[in-house]
Length: 135
Image 1 (cartoon, rainbow, N blue to C red):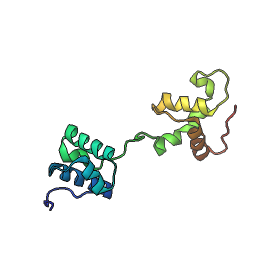
Image 2: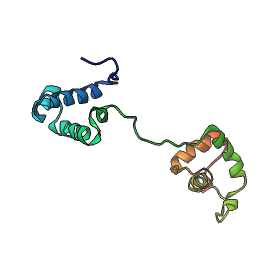
Image 3: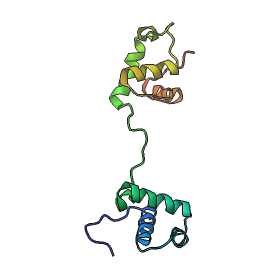
């Protein structure tokens, strides 16, 4: 039974991890826990290790996925046409042709964010109508 003050599990996977911890606390073996929950012993081992090293049951709770946090804002994307209008040589490139690789480099220099050239192409199509890779 859960106390009213404890947070409710967010999903089935979290409930399973928390149940594994409860069973472990009751003296069940990893093999028994795995069989009861329908998971591998390796998964149970990882969960218990995480709980032991990370502060108990809270370490088993769902955590937001890591991933790309930074992305260009709409305002920054809106600045792209003006940046490109300055020409590639204004940013130290030899020759005044823009390529997605060069634009990616400018985005990194100006805004401090890294983008793959293929994604830069999508950004440019959206924010710079008529832009084409000049390579």
